Length: 273
Image (cartoon, rainbow, N blue to C red; front, side):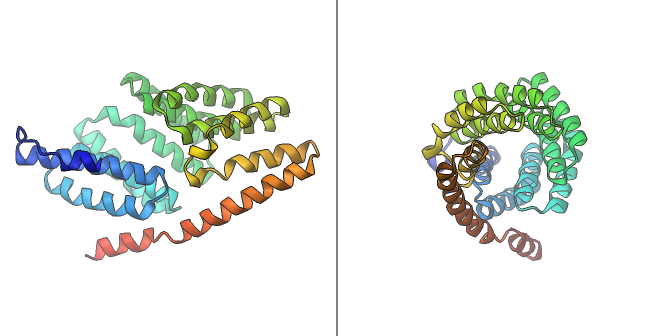
């Protein structure tokens, strides 16, 4: 992204060049968000928002609102996340950005997940899937299936949950997103475990561990936690303790990183300025 940002485009007008730069910054903010670098994501997005609103880049503004909602969800600021979702929905409706409904309904389903509202998770995930398929957006389809897996897992319909998670695996193999791929294998493993299919659960967590070294640090803790459950279940206590130790070290580090994030302070400073 930084390399692309330095390129000059003599064939673009000044406004088109700015729009191109904002697109790149939006992509960078998405990378920050997925890697739990919330301070960097937030400051980048708020800077984009200033310029996109001023220049009337309505679609960039809408996508920025959607990503801000995601950042706020990771910071557990559900009220602010809801506000950004409302703003995104208003822009989508006003400017007929129907192709963004897939991302919108996924984010809304994710918001309801944090509220523990399973029926609304499923309802909005189904809408996200509908729009993802309508506009052939593979990312929206994958995210919708993920959220459907979460919803059905909450309802203890493990067969449905596993089916949806498995449908996402080819997408992350294709895109090379090893963290999300490992998490899909882990999600399948977890649902097999909850359904008392222990051999299958072991098989899928082993598949997840294949990508362990390449995963984003913030998601690694989910893998030893699942192996801890499995080894404790079959009474292999030495192995269980080994993965308990791994989980503790990873989760403690992640807690320190998350506590250092000053998301609320950055927002307040931006609003004051």
